[in-house]
Length: 248
Image 1 (cartoon, rainbow, N blue to C red):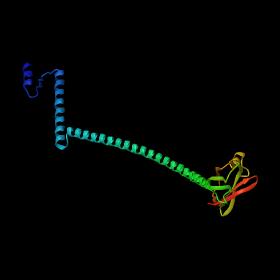
Image 2 (image 1 turned 135 degrees about the horizontal axis):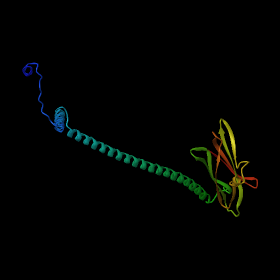
Image 3 (image 1 turned 135 degrees about the vertical axis):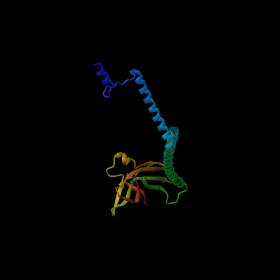
Image 4 (image 1 turned 180 degrees about the vertical axis):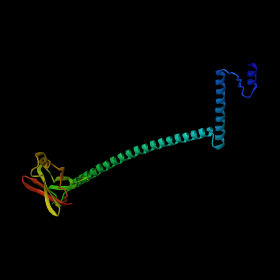
């Protein structure tokens, strides 16, 4: 029996025995981690080598980005300077426009003052020795013009009336005006003071003076009307003292 077992073990069909060395699992885990770390390091090295070989490295990219960021900051600063300069120019333009409007207003005031001075000059001329025909109530000057360029129908009149010669008492009377105008091919007359004028409006045409008196006022013509002439009449006690027609 023993001989048969010994022959069986020595034959080809005898069972094989494998001898393995036994490693503890912490050691096997450490070896696996080292292998993975070596593989990762090799991959990084290959990647860095390939990047250096194929294109710019990280330093160049970082430097390029910093350069672009600096250019962007410079462009933004230039934009802010341009905006501030534009705002300053706009402010100066507004100031110049305001100054121009103020200057135009001063010019209008000077023109009105010039008109008044001309009227005064006409009055002082009337103080010179008068001729035979220049006695009693005299219309020295009359002026009619649009009150505003934007309101061509609203008119302003200025009138200077004088009592020539030796005035020993006040003249008391009133002024009547007839404005002849055309509208849509027709001729019309606008009378002042109006028949339905208020007492305050009528009082504006009253006269009471010793040497001279100025009258100034406004009226509005109908839309589309064009004034052609004005007849100025000075009345006293229901009688016409003098009248004069002025063509426009």
